[in-house]
Length: 338
Ligand SMILES: [Zn+2]
Image 1 (cartoon, rainbow, N blue to C red):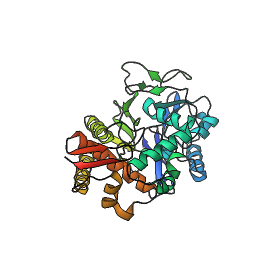
Image 2: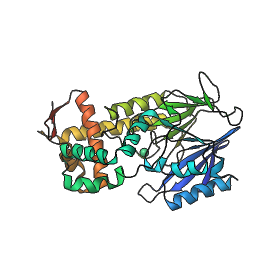
Image 3: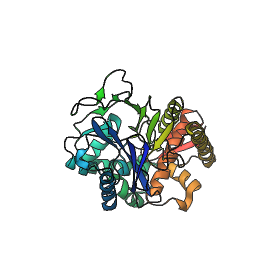
């Protein structure tokens, strides 16, 4: 079945294209229609049109959200986790899977929203963003965490799920399980991002880790890993060693030339490393000053936040390569070329 909303991208594996009101105008969520299970990978934004389209997509396949048995959230960004709470209300028996590293900062945000926001403001200030502009910058980012309850399985990476077990039984399988979906932890875009790989079918559900035409934001911020760009590049290398027939990404069409794409992405970040290094000039400079030099007025509001964390992940990589030195005072973090 092929139409703009629902596509059968592989046998009994459907993508449902949900709208988003941004420059990036859609997300693909995936439905695994298995022998004994109906699993959803990612949930779409929690906006009326996105909710309607998800239900409509399921209805076209003769299904309802209440029939979902398992929900995978590749990472906790609003377009991936947004409808989770609603879906759990409709399918209370459904099991939820999320990486442990993704859950930790999310839980912190839910239990101490004010504290997290304050720490974020302080952190932005030390990186050169004045308090007066940080509030607006964060409106979108910090307040978008849904109130979810996660007593379910938290993933580490390496788990395998097989959906041909007796109905009602958990698809989680320990040890080798041919035909199953394997969780591969791919930190970088977020600390707990994971992808699902089916070794026998050679299919990779790549989330935001590997996209065909856009490069996902790789940022360093409170709650990220210590070296997000290094982790991202390592996770890409890990994927390039797999034998994949088709990559099924969260944004854009499916693709097969993944090794070429991985080389492009590595090249893209090498160029960005050089640009950021050059922007330090004779330094020392804050990350915000680096952003101003490179992006200027093109990055405003939340985009400025994304540019800042992207600059910081590259500065950290340069620091680890010995090309950049960091000077920290209680009020500022300054970078200079080594
Ligand atoms: Zn994302």
